[in-house]
Structures are given as structure tokens and as C-alpha cells.
Length: 242
Image 1 (cartoon, rainbow, N blue to C red):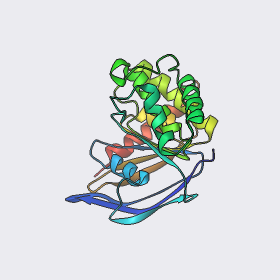
Image 2: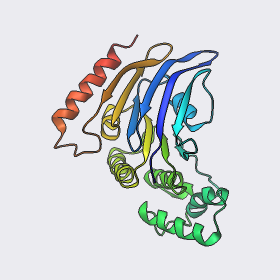
Image 3: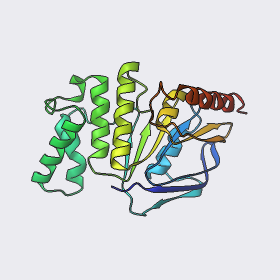
């Protein structure tokens, strides 16, 4: 599965008041981009534009290939509470027109890879926060997208589960060659998951800093000095927002 390339140029968006102004960035195939900034700065708006849910007032987003598949994992997971785990996973495959036999095989394989085997009949309300997040990731991935878009993916779960799921996401990213764009409030999460970190701020929001990150997805302890240095640069950029 090749990752998509993203070219965003001059994005602007208003909702009664201006939210985004002249936001431009590029993500190469198979790379990851982390958006970090204060609440209300427009991170989710950027993700929704990338996902095709809304359009910018000006500017443009180009995906290569143009028919690249996109999947979005929302903050509340977006799971259907009246469908069990297997049915939640199966839905994108039904919409894609896959035959029942292929759907069954893919669902079983995804349950296994997400560590959810044996939970296929459970409903979201019967699952832990970490299990629901795994299910949401699995549903986003089961259609084999080129671009995975994540909105505050691990904000509502405990620290240990969060780190476990971050590492799972890294393994999926590296193993499948996905292109990933995620929004997060966590500087540590942005640095662990983002090849490139965009610091957002201002009114309306613009890019305050774009930082290359050579330690994305690597051992946290072994690369602690580099991580601390990059975190300091992100904090400095956030503190300087106007």
C-alpha cells in the first residue's frame, strides 16, 4: 500500500471569524506530519479539509495519486454503538462492495492484528477506552487507505495505554507505508509520531514553525537528548505565538 503525497497551499478558512490563514505544507509518501497547537487553533479544521469533509475558503490540497484513499479517526472514535466490533470493522468493506467471504477474512485478520481477537461480538460500550481506540484504528485501516488522518487519537486514555497504542501506530505506519497526518495537544506525542512537526498558533491560525524530526518512532529513552531538544524548540515556538 503506497502512501499518498500531500501538497497544501495557502489554506484559509473562516467560521464567522477567520480560523486559518495561508497554511501551506507538504507531506511525502509514507511520511508523517504532526500538528500541534492550543485548543481552538484550527487543527481539526485542517484535518477535515484533508479528509474532504469541508473545503477551504481559499487555497488548495492536492493528493497524489488523485484517487488516494483517505481514512479519518475522530476524537470520539466515530464507532457505531449499535454495531459490535466485527460489524464496525465490516462496514467500510460493505460500502466498498467486497464479497462476504473476503469481508470475513479481512475482519478476522484485523481483529487479530489489533489485539481484539475474541472480542468481535462486543459492542463499543462493552470495551475499554484502549480497545475502542484499537477498533477505530482497525476500521480506518481495513479499507487499506493511502492516507490516515487522526484527530487527537489518544487523548482520552491513560498514559500506559497511550504509549502502547502510539507504538502500535508506529508499527502500522512503518509496516504498511502509510502517510499519516495527526493533530495532538501533546508535544511528546507529536515528536514520537511526526516526521515533521507543524506548530500552529496566532489569530487567525498560521504556521509558527515547521520542524524536521529525525527521531520519530524511535526509542524514547535512547533518543532522549534529541527528543528534549526538539521539545524545547516546539515549546519556544508555542510561547512566541501572537
